[in-house]
Picture 1 (tube, rainbow, N blue to C red):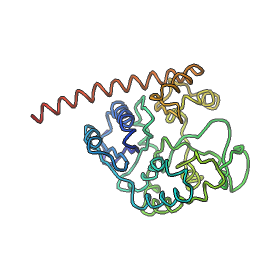
Picture 2: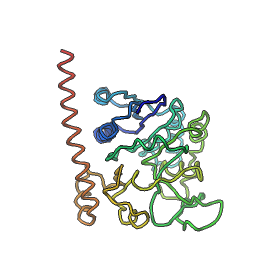
Picture 3: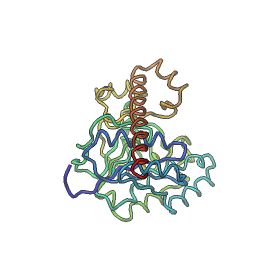
Picture 4: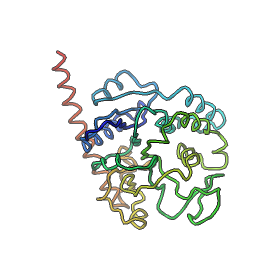
Amino acid sequence: MMNDKKYCLVTATTENYIQWTMTMIFSFLKTNSWFKGDVIVVGQELSEITVSRLAIFPNIIIEAPSALLQGKLKQLAADIPSRSQAESVFYSLEIFRFSRYDKILFLDSDVIVMKNLEELVALPGDFYACDEWYSGKGRTMSDYAQVDHATPGDDIISHPVNSGFMLVSGEMLIPGIYEELVEFLDPGHWRNCSIRFTDEVVINKFFNRRIEILDARYNYRPKIAEGIFKAGKVKFEDARIIHFLLKAKPWNFDQVYRTSIRKMEMLKAFESWYSWYFDFLSWFHLMQRVNFVKNK
């Protein structure tokens, strides 16, 4: 795709998550040959070996989370100790710091990209994401509790989103948004709700009514396939992006066994991920040998 726009793919990772992150990046680049933008990986204290491995991708940039965000996360962990083990989940907030880009796509590292996403760059809005679930539920601003979509009131988030896929541009990337968002990261948001919620609490509350909803093809979660089909007639075969929720990751083999027994879509999703993973490994080892020969 030839134009003068600056596009960027962003993800977040940790040292122990790196091969899953690289599988996601590989699947995105292979299915989106038009993309010539930067790939930003947000991570803290990544080893030299990990950084060198990531460098096999073109236009890769390693970004540490800002001192501002790290400071806020330390305050949050001090107030709510259970949050101290989930710092990296909040690194998705860093996308709002990268205002040098015209459009940013954020993807969690536990996704694979199945199809071309070029149509996303033509979308006119400033913030797109996909529904958190498809059961007709919203959440309250005060305690993040579930309510019906139809419940009226200023306290209601009618369409809470899952943060595994976010597309931002325009007004979402102006200077000052990032600082306001990080400042909004206050322990009070978690005092009356489940501790399993992380960045989604902040994103859904801060951007309430400013997020446009895309259908589940862009954040297809096979774990909730029945609800997705019932709500929007989106099937596994329609998915452009597949997202593995919670513990049901392809590398957690006990979960693979348990969830694939009950859900055929999970079995299909695991098969797709393994196919991408093996393709990535073949490509990665080949590229390492090519680079070795070039540098001899």
